[in-house]
Image (cartoon, rainbow, N blue to C red; front, side, top):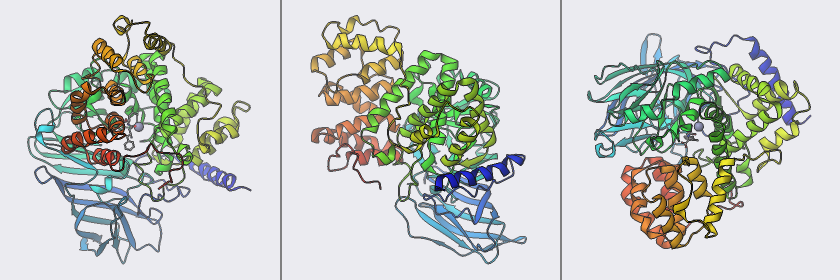
Length: 640
Ligand code: BES
Ligand code: ZN
């Protein structure tokens, strides 16, 4: 019998037991023995697990540190275990105590030498398996999971701080078992300057009094990468009775308008996949240095302000982060090699929400854009990185392993299944996956098993297991995939072809009604370089240089670099220094890095922009501009 089959049978047996148990989402810590160890964490969750964390932290904006304590309730699983191993990175541990009977006693601890990617294991030895442990600690200003913004970097000119824990940055601000395979509940007391508001991935009260002393509770079990905090001058505006937006005062109205379809989106997702399980759904709009588009922190998604463009054209970001309330936050990848279970499922659900709220045209255009981006990116990816079910990320930084593959190929796979089985069969199947795996961490082999038993076997003759395996375990895009096709993009392509042939001046385009996506298509489909006259003609007609739409800027500025269109440089610099979202600025830096002069300019801009960038963005830009001029990645590049 082959290993896969054996694993499948084992999983099937285990899942059988699981199904008989009433799911108690609040208290049980489902122990899934099939979840292999996470190579990106030092923790040993097969021996002991954190069940609950109680944080008591003071936020020192001037010193850029969090100081205080974390108290853990532990569940011991191995009789012989006598050590609690936690992940930390750059945390100063003051003391460790254990609850022995009714008394807190000091415990000896040891910090291992620091690993550049994973940080230091904190080892706490104890004679008996104590039920509770407390750590007194302080973070450092350079903590990779926190960004401390100087007042001038925010809209309201007040200090601001926020966390970004995914993938493995929670360990830089709380010592914990930093693996998505462990889930815990938490409470927190956060003390800040009286003039600032604190928020967490927990039960934020829209009516909370701003007094500098805040308490939070997260009663649902979450993995460490969803632990989140933000402190700043933010105010609340409701969207519906259970949804709303937090933002700096000068941004909150525009944000609430842009995101006003949120309640509709929640209802679409609930109709498809079952009730929203997290109480409120709020969003926090961060300053522009936020390194991502969005982050699905439970009950409080963190959002980039760059999607507030006035016409709701980029609100698929809301659909995406909201969708994680099912795919990711409810059903979580147990280690980062299976990230497609989070991001691919979420991209699929996102697109279903977009289709229901804004129509098929927009949903299809977004599919085409994503598939186009994936095809380009895949050319530079090693075959091993083109799989959905990746090999364990041993010795690798999960942030570096982040590509479009889990997102777009993952979504495409689910879309393929949807097309073959039809929505009337596939929608209930997906709902069943979320319901049966709610509040657990899981992996690709379990999905493969579930798919075989619950879909393929029940509806034979529609999809073969060979086709499924090709999607999960082979590089590239399987031949069974249907590429998305958009009529509206065909019209854009036709206009572009005429313009390139010199038969239609830019000023005469019938592009008045074009959406952001049509403009993106227009720019994306351009030849690698254009002539100075062509660039100038486009710029005169459409004012791309200096555009307020960062998605357009993301595609225009690299084209200006390739085409030697230097007039764009001052605006390009303003773009690169005002925004820290990696996806938006990296293509321009990467293009600049290809020539010595470009690299020189890139370094000058980076120098100015750096104080305003998040540590994650600093890392990515620094790498892109590092000497020697990086060759485009090749398929031979060895996996780290
Ligand atoms: N969870 C991700 C962001 C993330 C991924 C942070 C990996 C750290 C490591 C979030 O849900 C996401 O996918 N954001 C996208 C949004 C887009 C696909 C709509 C982003 O930031 O661009
Ligand atoms: Zn996501």
